[in-house]
Image 1 (spheres, helix red, strand yellow):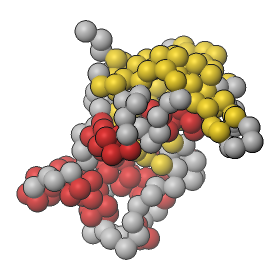
Image 2 (tube, helix red, strand yellow):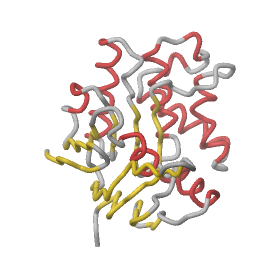
Image 3 (cartoon, one colour):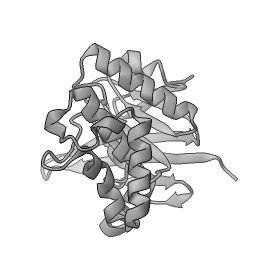
Length: 227
């Protein structure tokens, strides 16, 4: 029985613009074990964003097979893909993607509400997560009352709310100053050491070197995958 959370075999993604077909991914093979911290790096246009969308079940491949936590998600329809995404993947984005009109607590709670988690369990889980990211005293603050680093911590707590198999982060330090970015890098390292599976797409080699393995892609292909 495999211990891989992510199993990608011969993954291709072709975009048809009507006039021309663009092959963004040209046969990617990628495996990520449970408990790994993998950084995916590469130049602009290399296929990083396309690969992130496929890993996160935001899109499906044109060809090849993708198994997430043992479940073949390669050919799922939009509704089934959304269900897998909500259960299996916690997202952290460069732009935080928090709702500005509600509190930090409510932002973290939102996936639990949509997931049908009972109110008492929601309160317990959100409190625990806010404590874990060091913001127990900021739960009632709105995002506009928080710093960039604090907003990203709220986003990380939200990503963990549904206890996902994978935390998938897209340029998570891209909008932060050096000190705040360092804090987020340390938090990712701590989460990994606590047993979380982390996949980070980044241009930041300082963050990438924190990972247990760096995967480099270029021109839609994996060109290196080393510890």
